Each structure stands twice: as C-alpha cells, then as structure tokens.
Image (cartoon, rainbow, N blue to C red):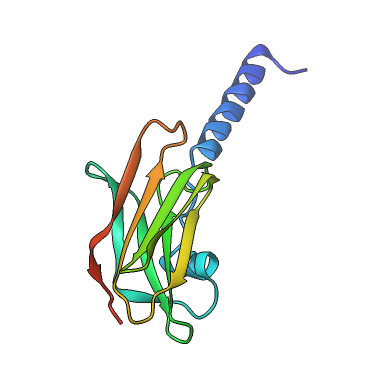
Length: 150
C-alpha cells in the first residue's frame, strides 16, 4: 500500500514530466525543407532571397524567395520559427513587376505558407507575415524594392 508521501511524490513527478514535455519547442523546418514542401521540386533559393519576419526585435520566422530556372516560376515561402507546429495565420505575397500581386493566407498554418507565379524576365518583390496563435499580434518582413530581375 502506498503511503501518502509516495502518492504525493508520484503526482509531483508526473506533473513535472508533463510540464517538461509540453514546453519543449517544436523544431522549425529548415529553409530547404520549407522551399521543397512549399514550392515543389526544382526550386532553389534566389540571391537576396531571405528576409527575417519580425515583431519589434523578435524574429518569428523567415520569408524565402525561390526560383525554378527551367520553368521561370518564382515561389515565396513564409516559414514560422515562433509558434512552429502550432496553428496560426501565415500569409505570403509575391509581386511581379508590371503583372500583379499574388497573395495567399492560411489561418491555421502549422509551419509555412507559399505562393508562386511565372516571373521570367521580370523583377519581383516579396513579403510574409506570421500571427501569434491568438491572432492579436503579427510579425512581417520581406523586400519591398524590385530585385531578382531576369
């Protein structure tokens, strides 16, 4: 028969284990994994193609520009590092010069969101956003000047 002390000690150890397991951060995907999963095969990171997604001095993720040289398609992926593995809104935008702006948003993204469009011979801008799970704060980042022309 367990003593009262043994029962309390067992409950305390169980509670501590639950706290340790539930607070362990999810490992964020790498840039390569996000591009491969968000864009598909054949895409490579573009030069000047990674920017931090920030809220003040905190980095919540990264936005990556990738290019498929055989198809002329640009792809942008917003990758979460904060709240990784937890559902929250993630948005991404690609603007192709003299064509249009392409935007996608997932209110329940666990890891990333992506958008792509043909952009051979054109300059592009890109931007991404990550919200906290409550939807009360957001981080943003990207390049709002033309680049990666060609």
